[in-house]
Image (cartoon, rainbow, N blue to C red; front, side, top):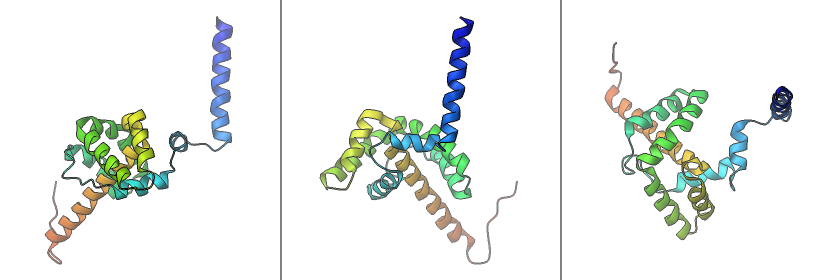
Length: 162
């Protein structure tokens, strides 16, 4: 039994080493399981008729993705996308996302049918779903900046003090 454990540990170390030797990153592997590249997925998400205020998701939850996107914290953004995409999907993003993809497929939008099939197979784990959440978060960031510019009223800025 001890020999089996040693063999498993050695095999695990060998596999881990091969990932780093090949310069393979986990984020790249996720995209390889999809039929589309990250660029294609993001382009498709930007073409879908989905708006932050009309999809029926928790906007407070979306802020956990929007804030790191706004601040440029890529590590936290990836973590937030991994955590909140399934949450938002279950909260109500699933139906509008599927509808938007189906409408895009009927309209002949490139890759929409493949993305819809991927969503049917993988649900919230499909790359298009993360891209949709990222797009909704970017809409939130744009709105926050518009509102901040409106509130600033020229040189007078409203600053919250804690």
